[in-house]
Image: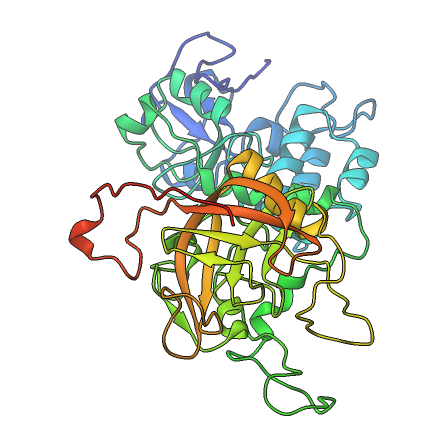
Length: 439
């Protein structure tokens, strides 16, 4: 007599009835397949015998129809049982791999070559670990759009929806109940998706030397500017920058917000004061150690420092006239030169300021105590951050030395924070803009 188990819907494939699971359905202790007790040719005689009951396929009590673990190879039930027990005894396999091999064996789809190909070890260690620990409880594969039940087991979204559509509201792995809210509206586990995505990316990423960026070693720098044994001069003349405390890139425009200040969580505030240019650099207000303009000709200017470098500069607080760079002879390792020896041109940092003028990019402004002719420069030694300005106009004219042209820029303050020299209560009072007469 032909004997058939119950299908995945719990329907007996011989009588086409759905037997009650608790009273008339019996599961094999070897393969776990459910069987209808009334349709068995030799059902268990006692309740005690059901605990060790094996199905006809596993016990060999079947019709002489070949059952095979490998397609095309004839075998009886004892061969199938031996193969299943061999899989169970293999300690090198995980529970997921054992379940998958038994499933392939019983369904007749097992292929040794296919298994060898899948276990060649080509997977990256992280991806292999994910396959072992976070597999779908139904298809036994890495979950696609994973859904995690409260009991901790994972499913593919499609597998879970099919399982619930069959009115099965218990976990297929541990038989714990699935909450009704989750059954009707499952949510994808974003954390598991991110882990799988990173693992797959690491597998597909090209091997080779990674590109090294300057800020990667920032965490290894000391908190303050430092010198090495090779320094030729004392103090900070040959010092290297300390740790950069903010997370902005060197080409960041505008103010430095709180989200880029992981240490203080407040950002760089208007009125902050630093002892020197190296300290100012560590907080991102103005990165260059010596240059007064931070910017790139093809990108724009990020910040400027008012430090009395040119006599043509005029500082009126809310607005100022700034002179470009260049036109001076710095040959012979000269660091500074007060005498203008050629015309300034709109190139390099001067072009960066002109580009910011055209595009309206905000420019951070730092004032130094070295600007002796300005009433708005800090009185004590150091540098102060005064907020962001916009460049309203730029042009060239003959400088105050009377022979060569210099680049001129009109900066107007546009920061929402009050200036360090302004009362808080007068922040929103509109003052008439002065008439600027070029001299």
